[in-house]
Length: 499
Image (cartoon, rainbow, N blue to C red; front, side, top):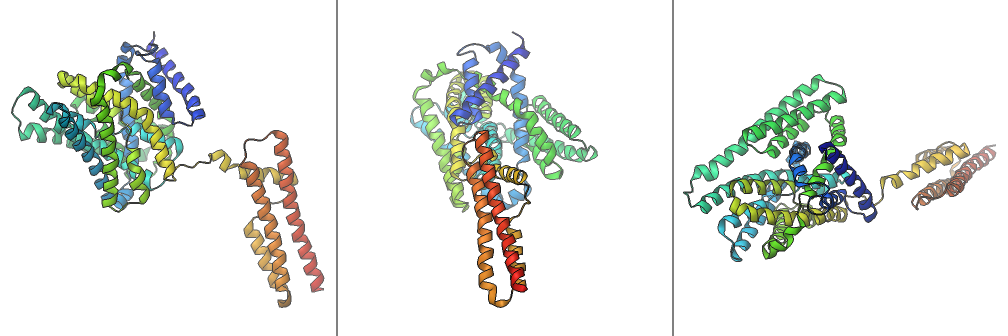
């Protein structure tokens, strides 16, 4: 089967499951993963293992753009405002998860190299899943503002911890000597090199973008530099996540006209991210679940405790917003691409340990990526950062008011106009009639408020029929006409009094 046809089929499966997830009120990411599991080589076998190998480039490119998008969300102004909070929370949740997994794995009798490496993998989160949830529901607030930088910095810290733990694990497993250079200096140098190259590319991108004005050209520049960063990372054996994250960070902070290009990029990358999650779901092997046993169960539970507990402690230490204390840790549960990438590195460098690590990570990914996005959505909703009322309903009052005005051919009058009218009338009336005139103005304002409330009540219900809409619009227009008539009567009464 042609690889192009496979891409088409994967996108179609993802789209179909978005409709199903909407009915079940679940995040789209969950639907993409389930779609991938079903069409993958371990269930219905519509996509084979050979196809997945051919689609590896899609995964690498998607991870690069995911890192770039997360980098653009790291604003210097926000870091200055929350800098200490972000650093402390990130360090606490990552290190506590690592330490707890290490200790528990050792206590249940697992080898030290395996425990160290699995503990390092526990630091990784799923920036793609988190970013998709935030984008889908347009979440805004203290938890979201803390979540995105924490997720970005968490993977940077996680990659550093993983590099050091893997170096130590390799020495312990093969029985070689552990040196400061191999265990610490080399991994740190690789991380710093990725950050430096990414910063340079981001600076150049921001500078060059000033000479191109069209959205198409600026989008092309972003794609070019991100793909170049991915290629350089593969060539130099560096972390493409860290490198592309720095490109996005420098671009987002140095180029002030980035809002429109980033909005266009968000639309362009949507199908790419969809493919990434469908492919990730297809890589999940349900047959590994029975072989994981107690190790997989312990890893899933202990990592979740470490993430939530570390985020809570970090928020308490920094005196963060109460919602950040309660809900941030839950939003850090998802784990996918970065963890799977770490497991792939272990498989390549330590095949004996890598097989077990990969099995545990894939099992955990299956659980975290199906339940994790849902838990993230719940956490952000509980924190009040996802609006429960859909945007179309929220804006429907305006449409109804427009329809009523058009139907009744009456002008738009708001509360400010009413207040101005009331003040003008009171200035023209003698002092002895202030109480009576105020009562009339109050009645007029009440009629307008009643008309506006009626519009909101009509539109907050489920989608009505055409006849019902017409009836409701007539009622709305009638209320506005009554209000206008009341104003006219007030003016007539005022004129008679003056005469």
